[in-house]
Image (cartoon, rainbow, N blue to C red; front, side):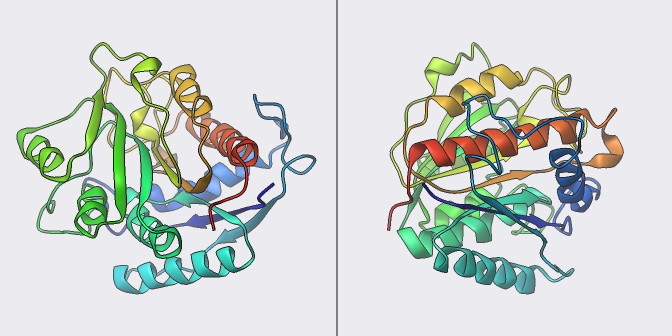
Length: 271
């Protein structure tokens, strides 16, 4: 089964409202390795016992997006040389563009399962085409996604609807949502989780909370039904200053365990 490489991307230079997500990786890591819990996943396997996971710590990113993108791509190449699967902790959602870019460089266009309150499809936001509100526009226009399915969306404005139609994005909005509306996707599969895709009652520690979101159980149900080989994943947009009792960080740690177990269960990556 594939080994997993965990690493943090402590940057929020492309955040549009307020900064703070750069501290997210450290907060998730602290919760993950805390004696408060253990390494078991709901699928059964445990990190360190059944699942091989190495924590590389945080990459030394800068305030220069182009340099940081290049550093992320280099790290992914290094991880893939060892035959391992990258699991990244953000940081703001802008980091998903170089992560998917690197995955597509290795595997060709990937299928993406994206959890979020927002579609992140702006052509640019406030004049910034690399905004955390724009990564999936950049991914789609570069041809890195053969299929993009977005789950949890509940802030879809006219511009983003037009962008979704332009790029053929499949959006499963929260109105009348049930997990069975999410398809079982083909691989190679990339999973991107913006924590604000969850309801603020479950994940208050985000910069852009949006009422009416997914429950933790709904998100886990959608994840569990996916059976394709996973070639990469990220968990982004934790804002620790806005967290309450570390509950969002603890949730992020749980998602690390569940994603690791899913990667392990679904088998080796596609060469």
